[in-house]
Length: 224
Ligand SMILES: *Cc1c(COP(=O)(O)O)cnc(C)c1O
Image: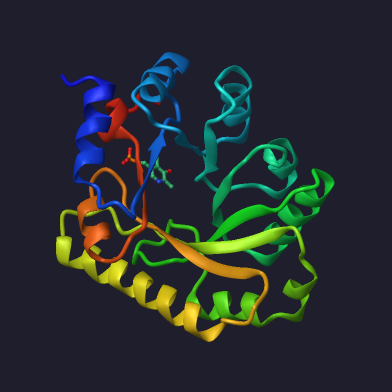
């Protein structure tokens, strides 16, 4: 078995320069994160609020913590002081709560809106229509402490690479259309397209991803 350091180096070597690696450390112990940190990794993704807070408290403070999981509104306050990017925003009410907590902490929190691209029914996310509703909504104009910096999506978990490619291409199209459509929207500054995980990130990159979220290919498989 390869070490965490070797895995990170191998992935970094194959990533194009413009693609950011988020090391998904959910369920993994502090020591594993320290090893990745010592290999030069600074961006880590977690999907549970409490776990992220506990890790953030004991690990070096130049780590950028990304919330990649489904976030409940009542838990935003715990991560608002330090979170560097929230990937899975899928409702206006959540955006409002993030804005409120960001204001309390005297900061702006960058967010990605999660778009539903898989044909599976279990995945969270907005349709393109719901995305437009949020971006066209007057209420968005009052949010001064969030920045929508990109979109995020998860493809169907399948061996069918054509299907994965279709889903990522679809998201890339929405991303480019949204960029063009809302050039004058103050709350929107699209520069990040977060798509691709351990099993599908090469396809995601070929389809325009600028940020990949990789867990098991770095840290090994998870035992829940
Ligand atoms: C767990 C998770 C990942 C990483 O998954 P791997 O298959 O281990 O790379 C990426 N994105 C999200 C949203 C996740 O929950």
